[in-house]
Image: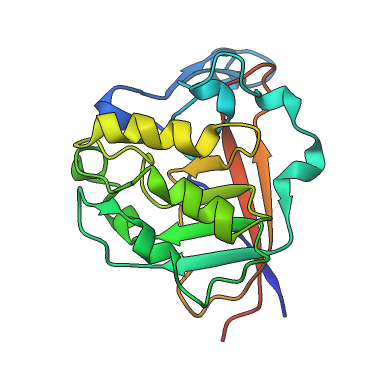
Amino acid sequence: MDQWICLSYFLGADTPGYGGESVFENRPGKRISHGDSCNTSYWSLGNHLGTHVDFPRHFFEAGKASDDYEPGYFIFSNPFLLDISPFPAAELIEEKYFQQPDIPDTIDILLIKTGFCDQRHKKEYWQKNPGIVPAVAAVLRRTLPSLRCIGFDFISISSYVHRDMGREAHRAFLAEPRSILLIEDMDLRKLDSNSLLKELIVAPLLIKAADAAPCTVFARILGQQ
């Protein structure tokens, strides 16, 4: 039997931010315990905090933003998981990892598992995260004609110790007309090379003209024993 799982993290005070800068604040509004009729809250967060999707507007002033996409764009019927775990801290993922015959050329979203999500509770998660070299974008466009998005289990496509190359990687993937959207900081702990992904739904927070947005990712997988 198929089952649905969540591949996003809950936001909270312990959510790590790139560079150690971003924080999530949850301030109380109304409180029943204070005599109010209901409970409400005020949230404050950066739009690149936690599991989120980067749009072209992130690195291109005239690039597509959140409200330039139709809902169907975020439903993926041919997902694939590339498991390269365990991948070393602060190293860059090069083209060779994506030149494998077992990656179907029909996929529309590619998930990359490095195992680095196991370090998310440590400062190392943002200080020494892996990254992806810019040249990978061209390889994926050439070999995977239906690919619209990649997602991965580390905090950013930009390794914190290779930030210049990370900026170029953002530009390489998000460049139009055939941009490849980026889902950063995914929770892939429930998946491995034996997981049979059947469908993915990415649900960004609906903010107009956003360069990025927190998102919830749901995956339908073949039931595991």
